[in-house]
Image (cartoon, rainbow, N blue to C red; front, side, top):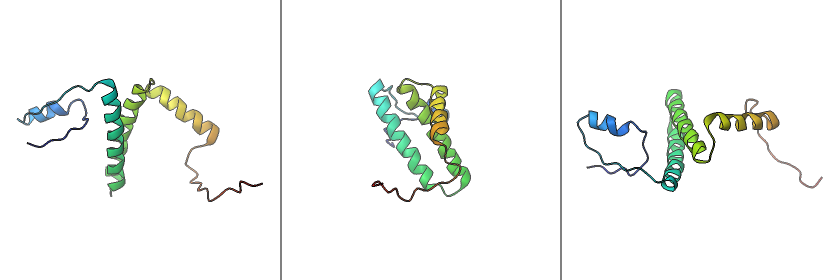
Length: 109
């Protein structure tokens, strides 16, 4: 028996049973779900930083995006609303395409 105690994608239990294995699950309450999503985002970010190949990195980014969209819903928005916020920030402050690296700011002028 291997213990996981973590949030998994919805179809994972079916995939496990299709392999002839048994698993135990439970449905999280809203606060547990929010915390589990936050933990999952951290887990996926760590896996992204450990990825050595571009394809592996892209798969981890896709996983992160799935978790981020679920977190947006927990916070009362959908993916389109989240993207609207992203686009607004990009319009007002720019994106990251120009690779600008801020070194310092003279605060006393």
